[in-house]
Length: 182
Image (cartoon, rainbow, N blue to C red; front, side):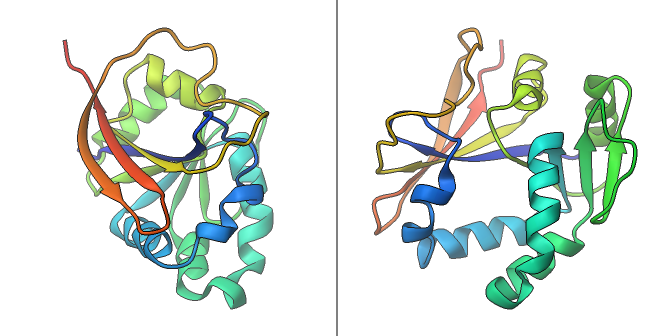
């Protein structure tokens, strides 16, 4: 059975919508290596439609700049939850119909972990509400963005247990949580 790991980059004020404004200055070094290690440790990526469409347009153009990281992004199998897409590209499979059932079936397939890419949208909220994510890795950046979409807006109180903390030299904290089991 596969586990789903959801990774998110987030500012001190909970903002997730403009990482292009604050992530690049802290990418190099430990954060880059840990991101690469995670990407190479999973067997597939899981996307909602919006992040998938954004990544499918950008990553194929980044192989020269990001080397084997971009090659891995472009070649790893991807699963996309969408009610509107009908055709897939970029090595992706559409999870149509009941997305909750589709993700449950995906987790039951043999294989390694699946990395959920992109956080905060309706798909992330659905996964959280149905307790389909096994582990959450939040990269907390020492930045206040001031405005923008917040992490998990509109979700009811949900409890987690902290299972790991990584403190990077550049001030980023990696906080790994698992949902509390009742």
